[in-house]
Amino acid sequence: MTDTLSLLKLRRSVPPQFLAAPGPDAGQLDDLLTIASRVPDHGKLVPWRFIVFSGEARAQAADVVAQAFQNRNPDAKPEQVAFERNRLLQAPVIVAVVSRAAPHVKIPQWEQELTAGAVCMSMLVAAQAMGFGGCWLTNWFAFDRSVLTSFGLAAEERIAGFIHLGTPASVPADRERPVLADIVSHYGV
Image (tube, helix red, strand yellow):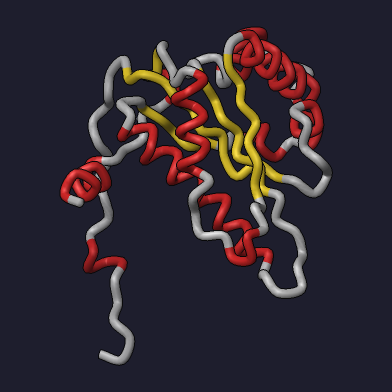
């Protein structure tokens, strides 16, 4: 238990530009996805799924993002397009967590969306426990329907997050964390 608490106290994101190879191999990735799937899931709906971007698939996905950026910004300079394309090329492995939340007679859609977020967080914690760094991002293209369609999402599906995974090349300074007195209240006291 002490090791788990220590890990959680030190957990932090490592931005994609600080993630290098190697990323998780196939077996490690299977472990990460299995662990990430062990989240609270009211009604056992499994309202999420995964899309893995690794190897050459990252370049293909990056081309989709670059084209969508150019379509949105026809006057964009080549360096701007290259910057957007690079977003999916920095980390060696990226896992898109896709929310499949949908209306249900018993389970609120909000609960289904929250469980997709729990999947993202569990994956980050597990990655750090395995010695990898990770970062949970969305970016503009997580909300661009042409990109989502190209990535194979159905019309009702959304991106909960892109989890960038790799070996930390360096770890930037930790950010300031909230002061508990500013965020905690006690009901009835």
